[in-house]
Length: 333
Ligand SMILES: NC(=O)c1ccc[n+]([C@@H]2O[C@H](COP(=O)([O-])OP(=O)(O)OC[C@H]3O[C@@H](n4cnc5c(N)ncnc54)[C@H](O)[C@@H]3O)[C@@H](O)[C@H]2O)c1
Image (cartoon, rainbow, N blue to C red; front, side, top):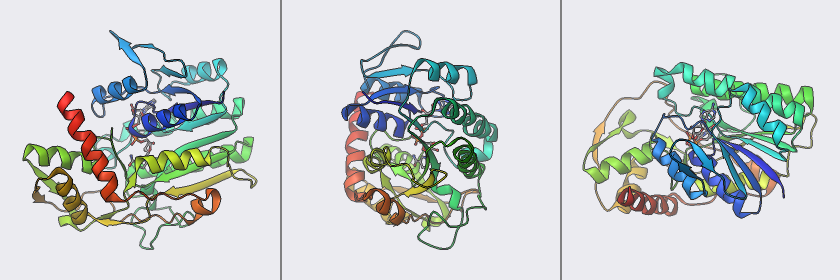
């Protein structure tokens, strides 16, 4: 059985990817520090869906093909122990301090999780040689790049949030390790990922919550923003397709966008959400937030050429599935 390490397994994307790879017959070891950046209950509930129950404290009872450890990636010793007790075929590093706005007020969370927490993984890959190291970067590295769609070889030297700067730093650190130690490496720039079991700190989730409660939603830049929303299953499918396809170049290092390649106006997005919730939003128009970008728009040509796959779930279909989950989850909790 092929064994894969997924960091950030209690997080939104990590949970879905763990489930997908378990369904496809992989053995998955998931790690997560389960921090309280947002509801830890949601993180534990995702783990429950993966067959992990917590008796009392944080002691996991492990499911056969899924093993979980509460570990921080900046805990160098714990990462070394993990790699010396398992032989991973693939390492997929998703754990990070996410969020653009939070990086304005909590900068140290970003250097701790995203920089100090990155090195132990690439060091472990250097010594233990998995077949492929895949890590999460972000569309935010494009900053306020005017040229659209965003392409992987565009200059991304002007990040406008610390979050984006740490993701760009990850790309550089990973390149160096790939070059020095022949680690087959792929960095993925995700574009606004949404779906069931999603992140409560993201706009679509906050909007749904506020609309259902009859509370106002904050609409930044007076609604004049565009986002390339990507449905979660398209992300996990994309990662699965890439597993056995590290770059054949020397060094084996590649960056890919994974986005829907169909930017949506914020106001159209809100209207689609209102339709699914069957309720109108009370809109509170606000100015642009520091660190936010005006538009994201992924070119997926490079990904398509490499794996013959591109995300294709429409916003309408994806938001419908999110709303269905959102209503059910709120009812039971
Ligand atoms: N969701 C998106 O729209 C999006 C867009 C671009 C990039 N990304 C990137 O994708 C990855 C996954 O994002 P997500 O949306 O699932 O976020 P998430 O916050 O839901 O998941 C991240 C998980 O990692 C854990 N974590 C954080 N730092 C850790 C550390 N140092 N050690 C161990 N665990 C740690 C958290 O507890 C959390 O459960 C992140 O790297 C994020 O930056 C996400």
